[in-house]
Length: 259
Image (cartoon, rainbow, N blue to C red; front, side, top):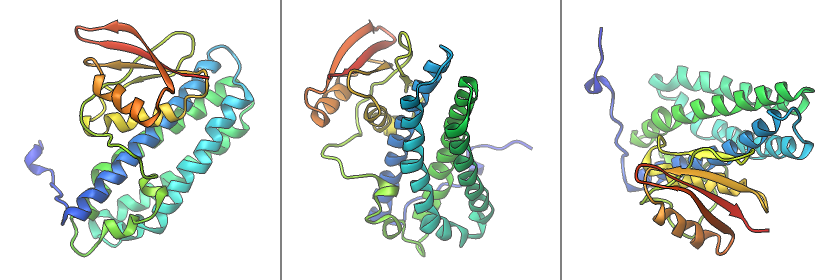
């Protein structure tokens, strides 16, 4: 039996506040995804050289505990009970709660692994599971809750920075630009396959994980002028920009945080 787009249910937010809540949650997920990816790639880059430094591992473990697992706990107090009250989401919510347990287990493995290869394996598995987990939340759980007139996603996430992130001073939508692969262990972000609406937020998240003197290598489908302006607005003078490739089909650049 074949399926088509016509077979896929479309969830429409029940009001403007619900639509804004969906946008806030999905954008926060994008920022977290970018932050996690940069930290994981730092681990993987060092692992290829045979040793992962304590600082690099600790940065990832601390982020996973303080951000990812805290985020998961907040979901289990708020949007997951609401999702479980809907018959069509009940089994999915149960499975996703188990995924939270798997994420916590991977963080433990990452913290206690002895060999560089085991550290890299745990880091890679953490990234893979988290990415798939977020996709299900973004595509299946959050829109369905926002569409139900009996549930207020906006009220569930109101004031919870664990679910929507801190307020930022400028928008992250519009325009585009992003990343690929650099030299010698510089974390790489290729966002050409990331949905346009969350592309900038993903880059912002990745930049948050770049330490003083560190860099992030980006690949964009066109000159990322709007993105670079937003980065400068958010972090005035914090990053230098050098181009590796300038079109016509791909733009590659390196953003380095000034010391």
